[in-house]
Length: 167
Image (cartoon, rainbow, N blue to C red; front, side, top):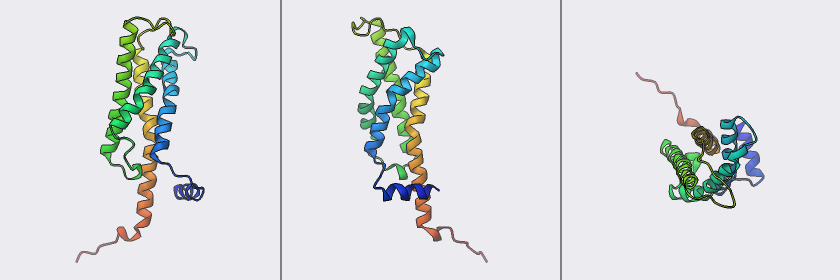
């Protein structure tokens, strides 16, 4: 079934390249931030936390390209990625969320930005939810590419698992 999807995508001229991973990583961050706050506050209306969530999402989107590119996430060929590459993805995501939380907390303790009004420190529970959600969402397409690459590699080498008779 996976092979059929890959063949259909290739025949349609669609190839998932690192630039699409970059776009999806950046595009999904505001959604993850909103979801993290909504889950933590147990309400879709964030109330007094709207300015904080907007600030968190904005800083996260600004920091993501810097951190992800500097740690080399888009120089990997993910169908053949190793465990070290996935560890680097986890490290980059932790660095992104924690640095964003520290900057938002520092701004929350300092002077308020007039455009956002009063900004609070982000709730710790929301930061933890955002961290795990970002790791899961960023790693899912990469794991799928890795699984597809491994499956296709096994299909290309049919004699790889030959029986051996020991006398």
